[in-house]
Length: 309
Image (cartoon, rainbow, N blue to C red; front, side, top):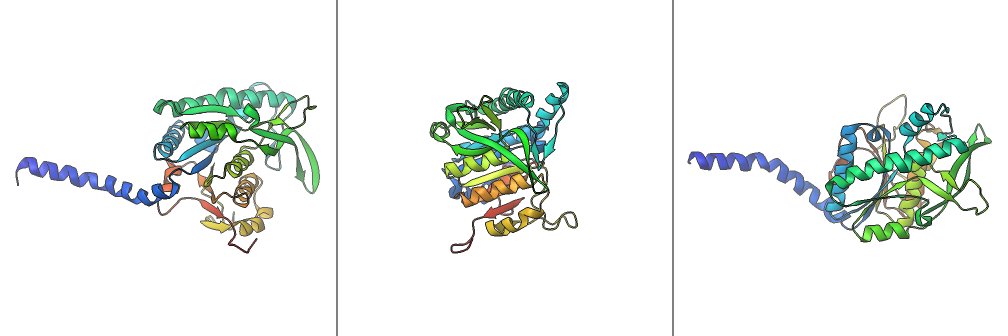
């Protein structure tokens, strides 16, 4: 064998792991081709530059692989930082931000004017793909006031919305045009007499409602934990899969921060979404690892078997 032949053989050999990775993804690519995937973007992935970049790459990869990704985002850390600069206190009840009219102005500005624009920009580095929306646009998302329940009592938490309706027409149009919708979790009031006009909607809740309305294949919720723990804080074992009924039984004992995420997953699969997944957004390329590998890295919620509920 000549030196040139040895060099060529070595290059081919070192490329083999890449080929094997692509082959492993093939059945998953086939299974998900043409399907809609709603991704809730949040947690550390929103504030770490490397994680933000990896997230954008993952979403574009989904789109270029024949899937139809939709991104729904909140902006908790950015909103808290902005409120702090304004001298307004961040307060949470039952895992939800108390949103005064003054805070609502800040929420609207941060979500639609800062977080969304940055995310659209990251995605559009890879082509003219992403389009930013809020739930107000084209009556995409309607809501009424949501009240928290603390120790069995109903508590007013201000301009926090409970989704009452989704009109996904504008999102379907963008998907059909090959775009990636990026949606801020702000909803219009469904009460024409409401002077406030808009509500801050929990992004987990908004993503779940949209996934159900779109008939999505998958809802993916990025978090700052590995998944749903079986016996936290006594154990860090993660539940890899559970049914809707099994999740419903666990909900009363979950931490307040996990409740909206897992309620969203439950709503999604009960609303026709094939799977809902909670994954660790602190892991680079977590989305690709969850969708295109055999192992997966989070907790997957599936509908109850037929005949059970």
